[in-house]
Image (cartoon, rainbow, N blue to C red; front, side, top):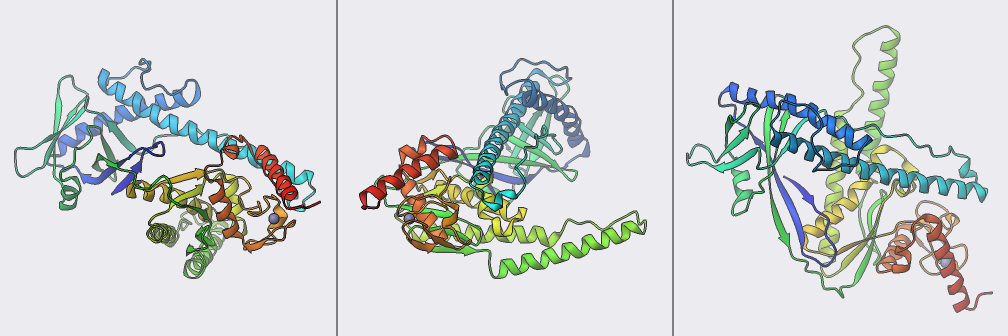
Length: 442
Ligand SMILES: [Zn+2]
């Protein structure tokens, strides 16, 4: 079962949409689902046309008047436009975020070069324009105007799915039979009227969903705990607890997997030279298994962190591509970076389903700032694990220092108004000066 979380302002009850997936549409007679195939063959290209339009020439607009010719009905046409607008909107948001990260990255790079740090010899970050998404999988996000789910009077099936087809006024009736665990998940719930139809490996699948409201149970005055996320240690809290790690078993497995891939790549080059046409694939099953295992370990760590802090509210970082790169620096493999992004997502989801308060704070310089005197400097980090302030000499584990900074950043409205890295640094330096003055430094 997949879960999705909608954005909610802090303090309001959180609405959580839960999806019930993998309901197979029975092929009671082959002809029925062939009608659905015909529909998809017209629907997907139309949806793609609007995706391209909304990603290039126009802003996504669910209510845009129709502009392409199609044999689909007016209602189906509208559904395609809505789905396309949703896809284009999330593509545009992600692209904008990535571009902002790139700009920050570039600024950081220039700053380092100005300071004459040899690390800046490294290549200047470059921007590669994103491709417009292409819809490869058959996926139809339908609403009640075109697909209706009706309880079945017949006991052999649970529901009937009434689907409008390419033929005017002709509806397709598909029986839906739930598995026991589907039935259990949906018991007593009001099923949302929009449904998703997917075609995977020649079979049609249905996804249903329902909304659940989880009241926020954290007291407004609950103590704030800062959480630093990383790969060496998945979670470090500002009260000095550590949860989960990539070291040890996971790292051993990763090494073995990398070796295996290297050998395979070698074999490929060798065979290629000899003119062999069909080459062994480089994608690795064990690599996928490992990635899944890492995510399970992350989930376990997040769970434990919530369980061991029953009365706290959490502050955590907005991870940008630049921060992720910095945090995974010692082992800059894509795998690490992608898993790093999974951690904040799990924090947010766990908080939503438990009715716990979590707050995102700015990540800029959180690992370089001294949590005592606010002095921000890359040099405060002699290595990945250690924090040692160049000015006041405060020294501790690097993740703990970051977690304390994150805790302090909760409710820091001055910091929140900063729009870029430069402004954050200026503010931190200003605070550092104030600290020096207060503590009688020259
Ligand atoms: Zn310091």
